[in-house]
Structures are given as C-alpha cells and as structure tokens.
Amino acid sequence: MSFPVDLTAVLTGASVSQLHNWRRTHLLEPEAQENPVRYSFRDIVALRTFVRLRTQLPLQRIRKAMDQLRRWDLTEHPASYTLLTEGDSVFLVQEERAIDLVRRPGQEIILNLADVFAPFQNMQGREVADLRRPRPHLEVKEQRLAGWPTIHGTRVPYDTVAKLVTGGVDPQDVQRFYPTVNRDSAEDAVDLHQEVVRIGGRAA
Image (tube, rainbow, N blue to C red):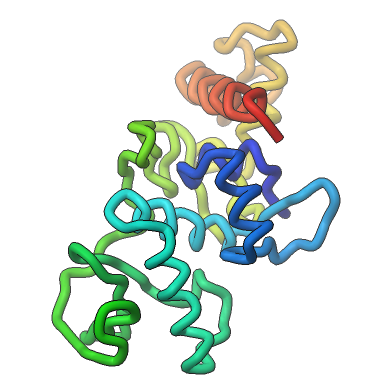
C-alpha cells in the first residue's frame, strides 16, 4: 500500500509544492519509485518529522542534518531515526542520548523526546492531525493496510466509505454495507476525504 501526493500532504502537513521540491532536491525521495508519485508509510513518518522541524528551523539546517547522517554512514531510511530540535539545531536521539547534527556535530545533550505522531501546526498555520487518529473515528496502524487510514477498529479504508457517501448513500445508511461503520465514522471518513480533495486540488 502506498500513498498518493494529496493524502501524503494531509497526513504530513507538507504542501504539495514542498513535497515536489523535497523530491527534486533529494531531501526525501519516495521509497516507491512509481509514476505518478506515491509515498510509503515510512516516507510519511519522515516527512512529518521534517515538517515539524521546519516550524522551528531553516530548511538548510534540516538538509545539513541529513547530510551529517550520510557522512556518518547512517544511511537507513530517515524514518528509522528519531530527529528533533530544541532551538537552533537538529538532534539524533539514540536511546537516552541526543547527538547534535548541525551546530556541534557529535556533541551529546539530554532532551525530552518530541512525538512526531502528535498533532501540530505547520509553518502555514494549518493544523496537522494526529497521525494515529487523523479523525476521532479513524485510525492509522502501520500493520493494518500498510498504514492506510481506516475506520477505527476495522480494516475498512476511509476512502471506501467516503466514496459511498459522496456517491449518494446517507452516512447513517453506510452500516447496510459495512455493519461496523456508524454514522460518526462515515462523517469522519468524508471529512478526511474532503481535506485530501482540497489539498490535491491546489497543485500536483
């Protein structure tokens, strides 16, 4: 399962143009080499990290941090690393230590670990939902449909329900098709779908 650009933008807080620029400049190249572009769940986690860091740091410092990881031969997918900031640098968190990647490369400090999955506000002031619960009745679990948003407690994809409703089925009648999907869940699915459509309609 891979994620199209519009859903990736909604789940990460990155704009479609940022995603394009970060691909073009190799900050993050999608794991899935597909056309049209699609992202993996690990890409989603890494992009959320970059967007959170970007609210406090210039992009060049984030690039410098990624370059430092490569210089140290730490070449796993960016989602494999815990990166956070406290002011003006980027830190690699390993167990109970944090190593400066930008200002004083290699220096260790003690930091509280920020949760990249938690909700936050991006640089444009857009609220980026909790990745695990993008809506109250929706959830994201990497082990379920490779991280595709589903109705809470089920394997029913959010967009399947949204398409039923936008196709004319009343939210309260979705249970006739999917007994585990109630009206509130259906409305949340439609709400996320509408945000994806809005984001996707701005640019590609």
